[in-house]
Each structure stands twice: as C-alpha cells, then as structure tokens.
Length: 88
Image (cartoon, rainbow, N blue to C red; front, side, top):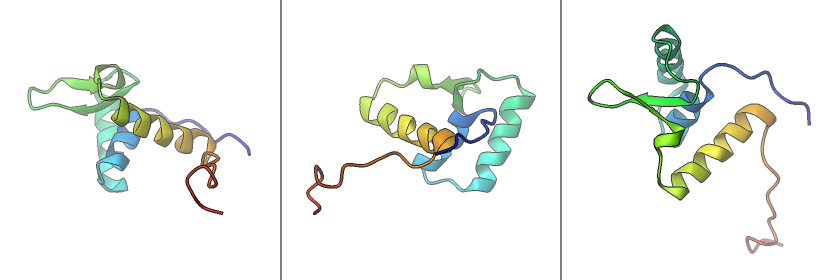
C-alpha cells in the first residue's frame, strides 16, 4: 500500500479523532498549532494554554489508540488478525 503524504501536526488530528471531534475542529487546531509553532507531536492545549504532546501521555491504551490513528493517517488501515479476535 502506498504511503500517504504526511501533513503537519498529525497528532492533533489523531487526538481529535480518538476524542470524537470533527475534521473541521481538527483543521482549526492544526492551523493554530502551526501558527503558534507548537511541537510537532502536540495534540491539544490544556486549560493553562500549554500544548500537550504525545510524550506527555502516560496511559498505554491512549498511546496505543494514537499510534493506530497515526498509522492510518500515514499508511492507511493496519492489518488486523480477525481470527485472533474471534472471527472466522
């Protein structure tokens, strides 16, 4: 499968996907991150106005979800072993 062109601030888009925000909100946040020169792995701004990055996330399950979204955004859908999940 061909690789997709990487855009800036994919973690913003991945975060907005796993938190069920729309594409429009994601584009606004990506533009804000670019304007403010946020770190490349920034995801969102907290209530104090500090950019939270992927490195700040300590939950393994959240990091796994973000990793899957980044893979989808850069390479397409990951291969899933349906038999391992109980499907024939």
